[in-house]
Amino acid sequence: MIKIAIADDSIFFTRVLKDTLEGAKDFSVIGEAANGKEAVELVKAKKPDVLILDCEMPVMNGLEALRVIMKECPVPVFMLSSLTEEGSAVTVKALEYGAFDFLLKPVNAQVTLDSVADELIHKIRFVVLKSRFGRLGKTGAGHARRVSSLKVPSRRVDIIAIGSSTGGVQAAIKIASKLRDGLAPIVWVQHMPPYFTKNFAQILDSVSTVRVREAQDGDFIERGHCYLARGGLQMRLKRSESGYRVQVGDACKISGHCPSCDVLFGSVAENFTDNALGVILTGMGNDGAVGLSRMHDRGAYIIGQDEASCVVYGMPKAAYKAGAVDIQLSLEDIADGISRVAGR
Image 1 (cartoon, rainbow, N blue to C red):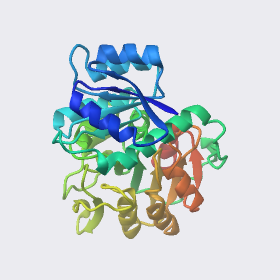
Image 2: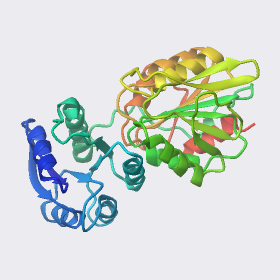
Image 3: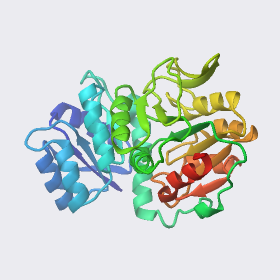
């Protein structure tokens, strides 16, 4: 049985969430809290497998509670977030502090969670199985190699395309903080909804010598800059008379996501050959495998994050199994790998 604790000051929403989760026969909600202080006490007393934690609560807010829990009684945490600029800022900060993932709360409290129930239940099962049996579940496919074994392309790299999802916030911060200045333009998809990517870009910019911004339609890409795909919109690269521009457009999901790594990588494959570098990081599912295969077929060099350092070895595994990854590196080595391949 998977034991779940819920911390939310809305009695109605807690009841709806509890009913939704206990619709899965292997789930049991073992405790409820109405504020962050109670959430910390609940986790310490009942030791749930997963905590679902609201961001905005009285006495102690969700972010403060998360920091205490991660320090004193670590447990996988899903944050409850509102789709607002303020809510997104807090949630991105929570992911930086170690929350596993987040769930957007319905705008209307009368709306049930049916539309997201399957995905939430799947993610909870995944993180619990990983925490209980992670070592037994290793596939061996994601073994890292030394960064010194990188093949440095003969041509100068003119574009770096990166994709990430679950676990990608912490991974991106680590990589961005270690990137060298003056690299080729970087285009990056992190699976996030609207509002979230603006705050995430600001965090990355604050830790990196590379200038990071949320991509805007029509942006010219420049060396030493990173363009983060906007949440809820697809991002592509388009050639123009004076260089390459970012095209931010439709909101249709591709490979289950918007923005999608496959969309971005596919557009890179259309415009670049062996002068491109692709990087696929931690994430659930297989988004990116098709686009990276297209890039690889055109001569691009591809780096994948290794299994041991991934929060979820899903997207990198799919790309590796598709034959689209040239080398797998640990998270600690990926920034160095990017600089070695694209630093000229």
